[in-house]
Length: 164
Image (cartoon, rainbow, N blue to C red):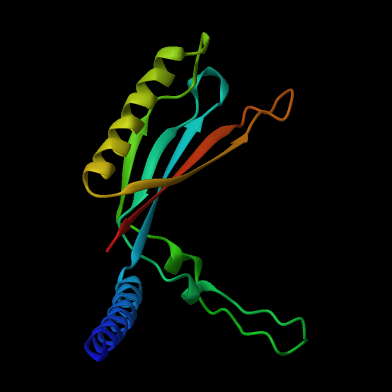
């Protein structure tokens, strides 16, 4: 009987120790796992008569937003001065893929839309093959504001993520 109690006691202590070590190992792995994000932006012109420019843009440089951020407190004289220049924000290392415009002289050109879809699909498939996962898609439109306003873009941001 004493041997059974001792055996059960050892099993319980062993189980508790194993459970604690497993949780500690899991938490350690979570703190080590890091995620990297990358944004690909597609700007498609919706300017009539095919006069606009359409591109897919992907930055190859990394920027730290903190270098270009000012903290505002609302108290006069307490705000930090942001001494960064716009030129410091700009990057020169990026991919620019030409796309076709939505419109031509005849109006909406559906063949151009299909061609853009094929190019964007190729980019998404390439990034997935490189280990990225498509996490979010955000879209926005700035379209014609009425007579005489020949401005307009359709913008899509694809946000990818992957474990480092």
